[in-house]
Amino acid sequence: MSDTPRIAVYPGSFDPITRGHLDVIERAIKLFDNVIVTVAAHRDKKPLFNMEERMDMIRESTKQLEGVKVTLDDGLIVEFAEEEGAVALIRGLRFVSDIEFEFQLAWMNRHLNAEVITVFLMTDVKYTHLNSSLIREATRLGGNIDDFVTPYVSDKLKAKLKG
Image (cartoon, rainbow, N blue to C red):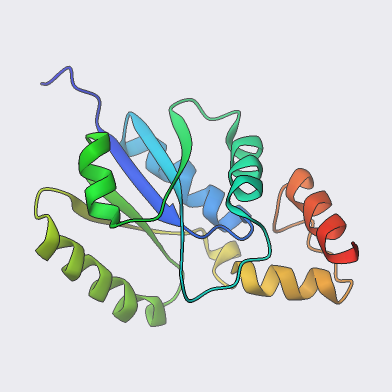
């Protein structure tokens, strides 16, 4: 067995991080020595929170998890993974409808770098309906989102959308 730590990268926009994302991170840290949660830039999306704000919310939400590092990247995720010495990319699945898009990403990433494998982790069933867009909209309309995000993220969302 190698002494080299097994590193995985979990990329996403995390705008904001939800309990569904946290569930995937908690599952991933059981499989890997280190998980790098990477705020990825998406040129087609207009985020509510800037990169630093998202990184802050992820750090605060994962501070109790040993082996989690938070960073950002705006390039090819497989190149970032290789630079970090990662052996895997983590992708969360909620619904069967996620699979087609996720498989397309996985096959492209495999084509670009076959050494970095994609690992799909299903989120807990209680979070399958969650996504960041839904959380933002519910907050904007005054809904209670406290079951779906950490208190820190809830406060940040409410402050951002009321300010």
